[in-house]
Structures are given as C-alpha cells and as structure tokens.
Image: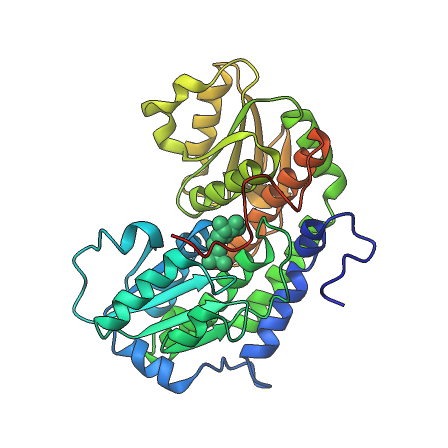
Length: 362
Ligand code: G6P
C-alpha cells in the first residue's frame, strides 16, 4: 500500500520516485476526456472577482508558492504574492481591494498557517486550502479546498507535495485564465505539457547513479554549500538548499545568483560547493558568470542545466519542458542530491533531528 516502503530503504526515495505518477494523477483528477480543466465553479467565480492572490505557507510549501507565482500570473493575469505564514499574520501588508487567499499546506494542520486563515476569514476574505489531506483542519476551515492527490507523504523532508502543489496551482491558474480569455492560458495545453513534464521527471529520476556520484564528490565532507539561480531557478535553489539543510545538516543557502557578490561571496573558500541552476536562456550567461566568479575564489562548481543551455564540465542535464513547468523538473536533482549526501554522511533520511512532519504550534 501507499503507507509501505516496499523495497525502498527510505520513504523519501519512494516519494521522489512517485512524482511523475502524481503528475499523471493530477491530470486525470482535474481534466475531462476532452482535456479541458475542471475546477469548482464557485471557486472560479470567487477568483475571477479578486484583484490579487496571496499565497500563505511555511517551509517547502512556501517555496512551492514562490515557484508558482510566475506561472499563476502568466496564466491568470492576476498578481500574486507569496508570504510566510508566521510573518504575514502579525505583519500584514496593506491588502488589495479584493484579496483572495490560498493556503498551501501538505498536512493541512500547520498552526502558523491556521492563524492567518482565522484572521483573513474574520476579515471576510475568501480562501482556498490546497492540501494533501482530505478533511484536515485548514481544508475544513477555508471557503474552498483542492486536493494534491499525492498520496500519503511520510518522510519529514517534503518532495512530492512540492511538485504536486505547483501542478495543482497550474491547473487552477489555467482555469482562471481560460475563463478570462487570456491568450497564454488558452494556448497552454495543460494535459500535454504536464504529461511531458512527468516524462522529464522520470528521466531525472533515472539519473540516480550520476546524481549519487556527484553528491558524494561534492558534499561528503563539506561544512556548507550554496545553490544559486535567478528568478524561478532562485526559488528552486531555496528549496534544494532546504532539502540539504533538513536531512544532511550541511549549512546550505539558496541564493539569488546576482546578489552573491554583494556580500555573501565572502563565505566562499577553497572547495566550497556552489551548485548553479540554469534553465532560462536570458539569464544563463549571467549565472554562468557568477559561477566563474566563485570558481576564481576556489569554489567547486556544478550545474543543473536545461539541455539546450548545457556546456562542458560537471553537470546534471534537464530535459526541455514548457517554461512554466521547469521547476517541476529542476527540483528533482536537488531532492536526490540531498538524499544521497545524507546517505553518504550516515544520517537517517526520513527522520531528521529537531524536525516534525507537521507543526501544530506557532
Ligand atoms: C514542517 C515540515 C516541513 C513543511 C512545513 C509546512 O516544518 O517539517 O517539511 O514544509 O512544516 O508543512 P505543511 O504541512 O503546512 O505544508
């Protein structure tokens, strides 16, 4: 069953492997025979009446919100802000006229997110909880709810919930954009593109041997590490770094590639691993330049790069997918790097110290 590891040594590896199937399940749950997306009509009406989407979440779910911002804006033409729950509730920005709140929570039980939902509901604003757990607190208390359909996630380090959140938000944004007659939404063939992304995820998952070797080469003894990227690649860098911190205990940071030189580059020493994520043609030369800057200070650099932007040197090559869906594929090497670095360093992948799967206190 879903709750068993079977032949897997750890749940995390099983859950990483389940991501392509989760994408295919999301396609079948949210589209009909003609390929049209199906989303609750009242939810759609409420979103169409809103002028801004506020995504509220913690941890990996927050990172999924950041990675989805561009996709939602492009498809729906509604501005999106992603916020940390623990900050937003007590330091609320000036809201737009017609805000719509989306709570992203794998467990649906996170107290930090719930305190925001309680406040925004009191203010009378509509809300949607996107969660993996039907009937969870946040899904019961929000106006609307959508399920991730990722199956139980057991490992403390979240993997399949992250990619499922991006996919479900893409479904929602496509539905809104189509209803608004937005060209980029109408021309986005969601079942086809998500299907292509699922296949690309399978390709990455089959690169375990290479990724494991690179994780050993780069991370078996280091004290710290950096992931760098721009725009979407920056957001994925934050998630890849969080995975590394959570389970391998390597002090890792996901950094905006262009900002590194404005201070943090002082931390780069001989042998410091710096992993660049490069999926965007326009910014690729800039991030490559940033990698050369750190190399000249002794950094040990590796790139996770889209096929069409690849060069020589140590690299993990990502198959080409629709630009909106790149984070679904580019995050997988980061998940696997964290997994293999942790194995190499001898820690329990599924049960890291100090962490809980869901945190029900503020
Ligand atoms: C905990 C978990 C994280 C998770 C975060 C948010 O801190 O250890 O892995 O990302 O909560 O959880 P949620 O269930 O709200 O997505």
